[in-house]
Image (cartoon, rainbow, N blue to C red; front, side, top):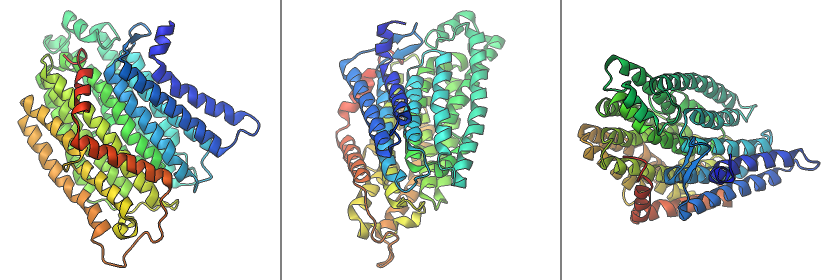
Length: 498
């Protein structure tokens, strides 16, 4: 271990050190101060975000710890999304936790930071061991955070379901890792495709190719669970509903950024083990099933958090369309455009999703009010808040001129370029179905009869208001001027996706 290793790993280490500081200060005499733990966690997340942005702008990259971590532009971009999500979740938590004194705030804030460190490790992992460590480091704090409201049966149920199904998914991941190691003789992801091809255990290796193929499928299942893709989505609605709303927002945005970054890094392994055609077909099937389950499930929801949970499943399906295109085009320059589209989508999705959950926290009012009926008459009672929720809903639906429209356009275009036209058509049709339940939110806010207001005297905390305002500005800005971000993510994929 060298100082250069530590410097490159600082985007991972900084939130972990901040979490330790929050816990240590809490142990000091007079250290049990809710505001003190909030400000320490806020500062730790802010410094981690600023440092990662500096690394990204400065163009610093390289491998650390004997090539087991790859700190490149893709990993740093995903880490920016992760630390930004952690920062927003901590900010939103201050409002949310004021009405819930039973939650231990220092531990709550520390676990968010530790989970962010695990997500950053997963995004940079270039070794199977680090993939597993990152996945568990991000997961275990989330299991605890989901059950942080011990007096709420739904919270306890959410944590138990997440823990049991998460352990089940981890077993698939470990089994796949063992098979991939047996097929390649190495645990380094970047070296694995060449070793699989050299040893003849890949898709072109006949019967011996089954070892790598099964390993790749098992490995993929572990990542698909974290993404919330069908048929591994069963935990998502219950966990999202039962967890504290800021934790749900963090889970929805940051976990996807980490898992999709790991999935993109594993694309060469999947393409070599399964073959580009078979791999693309497998991922296309998963994408179609995920979009179908997410959108049809959201149609019948009456709880805002559950609706956003099914929406999250559907968006995972849209992004998997891009991953299928990357696998299909593996070895050609076109694969970079698909990977860039996914990275663009991850940035946009994080912003609009966090913004929607910020509005949900305002509507909650510390009383656990999460029904869609809470939106009734919001356009008259709080027009600015309703306008913000409208922007986020339209962006999630993919309506121009929001950034959500461009995110879908780029991903679906990459599928067409890869020759996956039927998949692109299905994705467009699924987006049309999604319009129904997103427009339903607008109807509740603006078309409810006069006098029907579910939120009389609703108070908007300035922190939630500021988070919503920033989200609206970014969503509209990227919808009108997306060029700079798209150029950046395209350049970040050079050398990573070939």
